[in-house]
Length: 430
Image 1: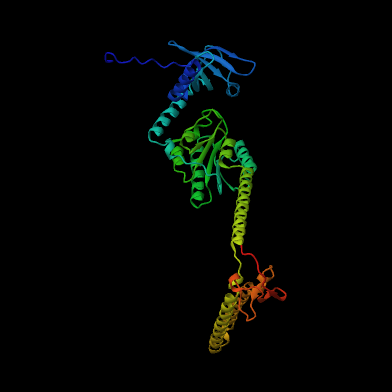
Image 2: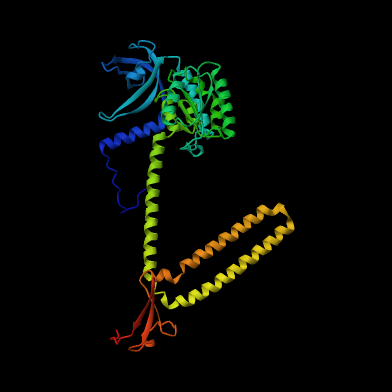
């Protein structure tokens, strides 16, 4: 009971359309698919091909709608008063708020026993967890191979192969034929699946398609076999089941990793179009090119910054030349020593090691050549060619500061193509 003085919670206020949709969703989750037996009443066929009628018995009646596609599968002419069994989906016709049964198949009373068997097996396997969404795997985006199980002469085979050739001609398809209707169909379907499972275990397949075209409940009954259902769950790779039309459901559909409304849709789910991959590859290339350009621009900026930071090198040219001369002498001595040791080793080992010696000599020559190039790059004359000059007094000492000069002092400037004698004149210090 509510405590005295506690606030009264107001009921939720629904929009009419939202309430109808909520009721329809609740009915969908609770009852569908559903089978109903009753007597036909007010049966009519509209010019569009859709059929409208009611099913009734002594306790009640429900409005029904049967759309053109389903009505086209009827194998008898329904009349008022006929006792029939229908399979369909219960919902709400929102514009009027009426309870309505969308009929997907209609037959004279007698076929209902099969559907009851279907519902019992569905409930059993669902209770065992075979339909659990948590165990279902996503289909790989880029399969290396696709397995296909259907009848050799079925239209579904043509539809699937055509769709796969159009979308992913580069993906190989392994076909395992089996009957899809009749008493022998479940055993053949199991045998075909087991053959593909072996191929998948060898890494040849990444996804398997189990497909069949539409038909009556009896036509599709092989896909409601319990052994087949348990085998579908054991697939080593994701399995897509596309049996019947969009409104047809089978036990295999519920056990598969993914249910497709038609065989063609199953093929489309199994393979991303080649054009989509090419477009993605082109976009990735554009992004890579842009990234490389940005890196090159950044490197050029860093190079420019480093160049701007380089100071006047003339003050250290003499020291560097002396150091480089000593380094070159040491390098020549080291190379000659290595050559002599290598030659002695070759002489000792004989002609069998000529090839090794040549390789080593080549490496030494390469090192010597690289050292020569480095020496050339450090040549002061390269700096002088850029407009710099080397100042010395008459004794040959380098002049690097104003404090080393006096007015009228003779100096000698070394330029890139010769020497010039100069004289110091008084100048205002900065």
